[in-house]
Image (cartoon, rainbow, N blue to C red):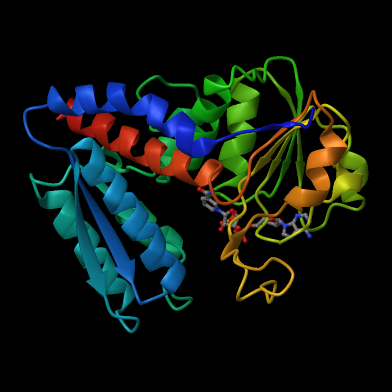
Length: 291
Ligand code: NAD
């Protein structure tokens, strides 16, 4: 038997009734402001996916689209308007922003009470402290609930996270630590990546590098969570993987047989992505319920 393929779309479906019921019980539909700067096609596609899921469960989104040449002050002004609006319960800034804009300054302008992605310094601090009222970064929440759905516990496991960004890698490492795993964090300066990743009971990869993880990076029976989303076209992988627009960081076809029947792996697309969107809307509902 091959390794289990972890289905993020099916897991999300299973979480939907409870989320819809929570939204119905609120006085007004929770509304998420999504601020986009410029026209990156991947950002536009992610925003569409977030809006479509929000509508499906009874929430609303407001897309605030600024031009590529918007200044940092313009973006912060939009954030502040959303902070002040009583009709908006959560705010996200679609990342990455153009390089001329200080991403941290924009994120810090978000009122922590409306921080649906859980990225402001106050939220990160509260979450690291394990406070119940902290908003968990959406990707970490999505991965947590995906693992829970499949009854894959991190307790006492050796979790290796590849990637150390504030947006994804560090929150995932903190999640594993909070779940009582022993955690190793690898990054672009790790001397021997395969030597570290092979020790993983659970390998979480968030590097943004297609095919970074091959069969020589895993041991039989491991659980592999591929967070990476890479544009096959931009990476010039279209000929190798015909018909695939998105690829992860794991060489799925090569790694799957190496995991054996006790292993498990997420595909891209259809693995972590749908669960991140679920985590985001769950965060929005949590914020709305507090108003
Ligand atoms: P980033 O570029 O900010 O960080 C990448 C990290 O990977 C860095 O810490 C770097 O040290 C590490 N890295 C890069 N090359 C490496 C190598 N060769 N070996 C080991 N480590 C290496 O990117 P990010 O914002 O953290 O996003 C990472 C990936 O996750 C991207 O593909 C992004 O599209 C994806 N992502 C997916 C979701 C989702 O819902 N599935 C959500 C957010 C981001």
